[in-house]
Image (tube, rainbow, N blue to C red; front, side):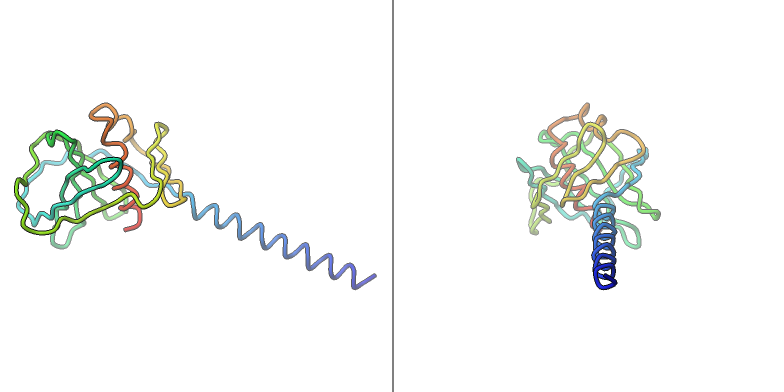
Length: 168
């Protein structure tokens, strides 16, 4: 009888441990990132690295490599006249700026940095980002609405770039 109670106790502990591990895994697959719109003037005096984002099309952009500061990612619309700029601040928030301007590269001598959608990515209308079987709630202003209103075709490559940035 005692052996049966001991066995049942072990099974119960094992089930509780599995539940705790499952809850931990679910929590690890859910994150929150603050997204802040920041009116930020641009200058192209830093080193610019051409970038290509591939997700249901080819979208051009560049990475602004700033010494001692986080890199900035510029993603251009297909007509190369509207762009979304993304970068991280010291608190790991994502700062966003939308602007108009021409793509600064016509001819490129070096290989561009290529970011591809290796997994299913999506930025949904409720401001949730889904990437790498992780759900990321973008809190702050509604990034989806901004980009959808500017150029809805940028939503998929933007989701790819955000997923890439979430791993940095």
